[in-house]
Length: 326
Ligand SMILES: Cc1cc2nc3c(=O)[nH]c(=O)nc-3n(C[C@H](O)[C@H](O)[C@H](O)COP(=O)(O)OP(=O)(O)OC[C@H]3O[C@@H](n4cnc5c(N)ncnc54)[C@H](O)[C@@H]3O)c2cc1C
Image (cartoon, rainbow, N blue to C red):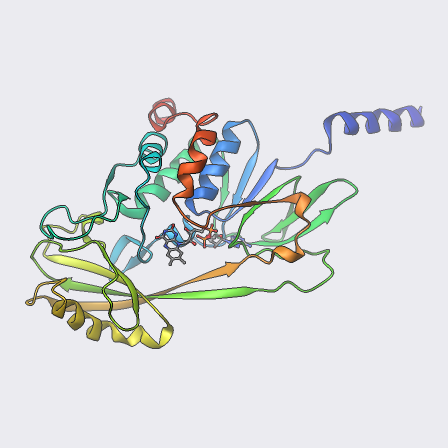
């Protein structure tokens, strides 16, 4: 009888596989990871998304800075791919505008597409979509380690001290993953991206949205005012990505440089400067047991364009999902 029961259990396992807590555990919440998680949920999978930060977005998250909420972390460009625009509008409910000054700045370059409400609009909508389709999201939760059980063909992931099982962990080139059963210590490669924000009083129209102004120590600059609805307030908020932490004290100096370059008005007043450093990790691919991991290509946001057709096969348009939910 006992033998028959054992054989029956083995048969069940052979037919149905090992029962796990989730079909996929996705590490990180930059937009491509979230679209992928939503797509897999829509295919009928149980998907857990784990994010160590308090908010979604990764390098595309928004922060509260100089007293203003929902400000883009740093400077961004989405590119000019019409497929990305169409997908973000129809499937993420974003209003897409041009990354160029709405008025004024007639000679300013157009850097392609951008959500009207900045990166916050995209990541916030993706959070709403996850809730609507049933993707489980854990914020403030670090995936501490992964143990691969090759006999059962599952990975055990430790999150907040709790173990969850899954056959597949979905990571990106920026996931900080530590294997428990590895033959060597993981190489943790952290890069820092320091930013200076300057809040100014300048009632003239925005003259640029994105620029590489050739200021020493500055990689790129973004005037995020119009994405925050600051027009008509007399305030402008400018984000600057700088080359290193040694330049972090240069806010007032860079403010003067922007005046000289006529990117802001000569009468502008500096109200406040604040700094923000984003830290990114390079995935240690060598220690992964690759059969249990899938690595998404998140290297450029424009990759949304090449994935969109696949995602559309299972996702429903934003309006349909939201009409059903609310
Ligand atoms: C400042 C900055 C600006 C950029 N601007 C652009 C741009 O304009 N256009 C463009 O195409 N690309 C840009 N990039 C490139 C950018 O890295 C990619 O577009 C994209 O964000 C990469 O996504 P990712 O998920 O791999 O990494 P990230 O965006 O860094 O996200 C990784 C996420 O995973 C989380 N995470 C990592 N390990 C764990 C763990 N163990 N447990 C829980 N959570 C974890 C992190 O907290 C983070 O939220 C920029 C990068 C930076 C740093």
